[in-house]
Length: 326
Ligand code: UFG
Image (cartoon, rainbow, N blue to C red; front, top):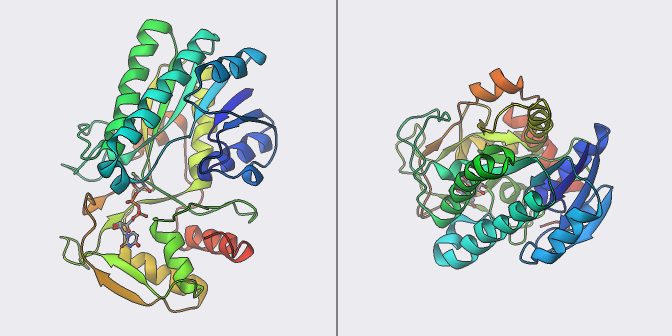
């Protein structure tokens, strides 16, 4: 299939382009390179364009016939979204409407959207399944929830069928070592812990040790980026078979505390990681763990890299091969 991968120069998007190439599909990346990297796009055509530019989107979608659009391009920092809600509602919601409108105008019928566990807010029950209420507590989560709602309405009105994947904590890197996480600034736990292990930063700050968890630090469900990409291929197949729009939660179903992640990194790297305890970070729920039974049942999705050590090992391999990628 010919797939427009919006945000294909970013962390998850670049792994998706590789996954599509390996599966024999034809990905075309569209990215404005605001945070992505041109050299991260592993193949296929590349279009430099911004989601704010509706005419550029129309031109890209009119130039060739796409079987599907996959949308990975968004701002992702929860804390920043609280300080600058304007950026998050505009980029993650309004500009996504541009893409959806352009897809409808071009006659594209399938849309796969990167959503997030942040749409659930503070969980009322863990593990979190698709029946959990949407109650985002920050503009990042709200902007993604708004897109999910708009996609449901676009399906009813315009026949744009969609799959929304709510990622829990995306982590890891391509096992071949050529693709990985290169955010600037980096805010995510695993790459920061690995930078500390490599001596590129003096320590890792642990945000809060008084949460109601066994060791007092936050628990998250880390899911390998390759497992996320595999689910997208299955989502593509789901839509191709004419099945209805559906949202899926994606995680391994097991949670690891911040201190457990640090211990796993010490084990994988053979280095010690100095820990500094710091106050809680605003907007961090104590425990986010996915119930991904629906994806397992309906898509036959089975994570291939569920072990935290394997996730950290792949991230470490990428980090060592790209020491400048901070
Ligand atoms: N953490 C630290 N120190 C750090 C960085 C993170 O202790 O230097 C902690 C956080 O407080 C949190 C855990 O490590 O408890 C994981 O933090 P990340 O920043 O790696 O990931 P988040 O859980 O905050 O964010 C992830 C995605 C976001 C998404 C969010 C939804 O990366 O894009 O889940 O809840 F919005």
